[in-house]
Length: 113
Ligand SMILES: NC(=O)c1ccc[n+]([C@@H]2O[C@H](COP(=O)([O-])OP(=O)(O)OC[C@H]3O[C@@H](n4cnc5c(N)ncnc54)[C@H](OP(=O)(O)O)[C@@H]3O)[C@@H](O)[C@H]2O)c1
Image 1 (cartoon, rainbow, N blue to C red):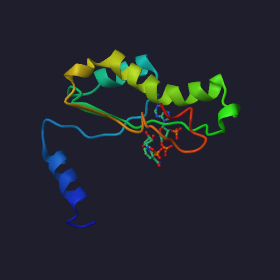
Image 2: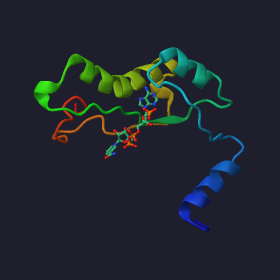
Image 3: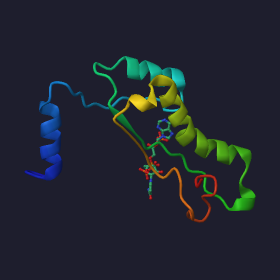
């Protein structure tokens, strides 16, 4: 990976004194935990990628409330927890993956909305 673009990007980010790059474990759907994590950061949150997902694939007639809840908690729950922790409008960016589509994969009606 020497001299690769990702290496240049990470070197640039790490060299900035107004930026902190790290990894912290948290239940993204837990509003209190998310608020505590955001408030514990050295710098204000500039933006977020919402990438959490849980999978409970099954055919439509096998779907249950619990299979929808499981999928929704990771994605909608994480958004709601973030919205409780910060003013979403104050962020420079918010990127959410696969939160909407027209035709999903077979067995993923609980995931596609
Ligand atoms: N793979 C694809 O084909 C594909 C295509 C398009 C978009 N996407 C989207 O890209 C993102 C990443 O996909 P992926 O394939 O890398 O999925 P993945 O391997 O299943 O990773 C999803 C991660 O979300 C974590 N997670 C679930 N609930 C959480 C919560 N409440 N709080 C914090 N973390 C939580 C999971 O942690 P645990 O392992 O501990 O459960 C897991 O590490 C997802 O948003 C997905 O919808 C994926």
